Image 1 (tube, one colour):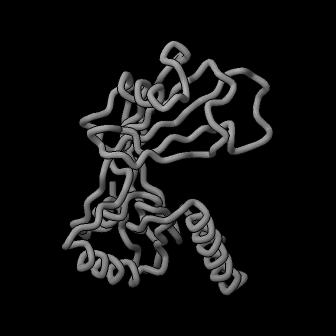
Image 2 (cartoon, one colour):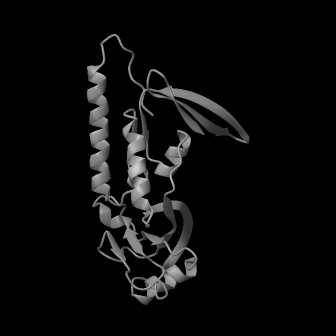
Length: 218
């Protein structure tokens, strides 16, 4: 709900916590906060306003009655959206050698032209490029991600400069992740950034007097 900056540094964070049908408001205090939220949401929490846009995406998961549909980790369909609504397909089996010995696989299908996508169209497009037959799809699940990708426009540069200025003044608030930093970063880059932030926090904690209480991180 909010992150109030404390005079001594750190933040008093207010959350809503749901337990059954009950919703309660909870407050916690932290010396350091790491946010992976979209940066505009983080700005809202600290009382700032950023006019940055994000594109949503629909994620379709397909359970396929086939051991493997491709030997790729992921592949992209770069055709016109009028021809293909699919952007990217990932097959989890191909990310690791230690997979269950079953003759089924799961595909993760990403659609950013959400107004065009549907379960039937996703399956039909995969069938049209020879990856599967529609009757091999045993189950499906759709998840909507409202803020999946940063959208750059003519106003973005000015807003990103203002964003950098706002957060540069808050050394106890770290932004990690593609949407948190409003940057199209790959997973390895995000992982490196996360390691850098953790090392920075630990180094700062080592500089604290030994009598100081352990720093809390959210």
